[in-house]
Image (cartoon, rainbow, N blue to C red; front, side, top):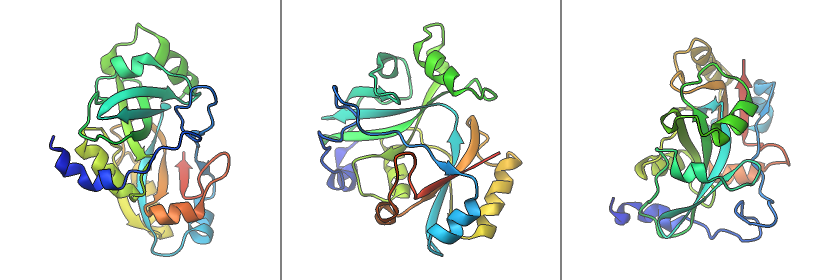
Length: 230
């Protein structure tokens, strides 16, 4: 791939802070936040401004990881508990080992067993997906959904990730409207959308990076995203 095609992404990459890096060896400080869930109508009506653009994605069942690329090469793969796991770099076939980006790029996503569509246990993913050598690498996949060190909006991040060769989650685009969101929830429950990946819900995400920063987060979840579960 021609690196010139990614000049917009290169220009929008932020310098990775050593103090807050998920890859800091001695002191793991950056959290893998979950998603608040429950009354999504309250979230839409009380927290999010009307006509705000939303991206809707499946809540994939798997294990959160972060990948770090330096000078175009995959250097580290960190699991949710902050530990390095070599299997992510060597056996997950759809994780690109090289990309046409020279600046440091930090990507967050999910690894999951694509042959275990009905399995619900998070423990299964953490203990078996990563550590059991008997698992075939072809059954393990990675989906990326965030570039940590950029101010691009969420939709643009997904586009850039796809151009770089990463798998991204299936997604839908809408504006804040309880009625419209309910349509997508009904489609998901009827398995008409997002059936391609194992999931136990959908996630509503504010598209604007500026608005994401304004909404902020707490120690457990961002205020700019909300999960709807069965």
